[in-house]
Length: 168
Image (cartoon, rainbow, N blue to C red):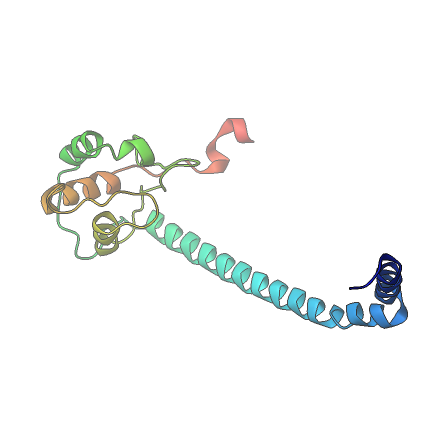
């Protein structure tokens, strides 16, 4: 066992070694690693941002094309929009997606007026991601799902920004 005097001397030497030139070299050896990690993190952030911008541009182009043409999805069965609105309301879809399928901040995403293709719509309803509960065919029949899709498709396009006097 060391006595208290030897322990104090040992501690003093150890502490002085941490703050000496030799000790700082140890910290300097981490600086290139931290710099490289920061560079990698920034590159990853840039890649994700670029991908997000590309997706947003693709969606806006698709939305512009959908707005100019009548939105009719491939493989979408004809449904009854009036019945679709009743089922949409009765099954509680409006609670997250809004009464007119417009979506909202902190709730479910916008569904209309230009919905995703019908097969993707069915897949999302039957096997959802995030917080949406699954609506299997036992809960929501294929005909009811087609009616809801027809209701979402029937929603009118919002007015153009430049046509709203309060925004000018």
